[in-house]
Length: 60
Image 1 (spheres, rainbow, N blue to C red):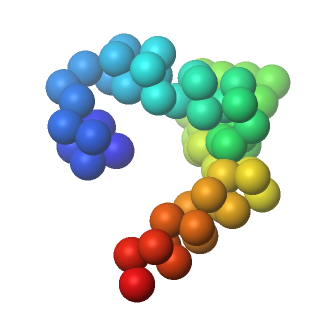
Image 2: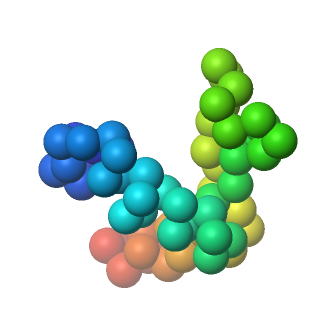
């Protein structure tokens, strides 16, 4: 995702994009009790998926 957003620093990505998306309910963590879990993944919530699908429709 860093490459897609043309960011060079992971810290910038987390503070500018990932944390706000989590706080607004667009993204959730697979292991929410353990943010540094070795198998941590971030998933779109229903709210996030709705926004994603809306953008996909606009591309058509």
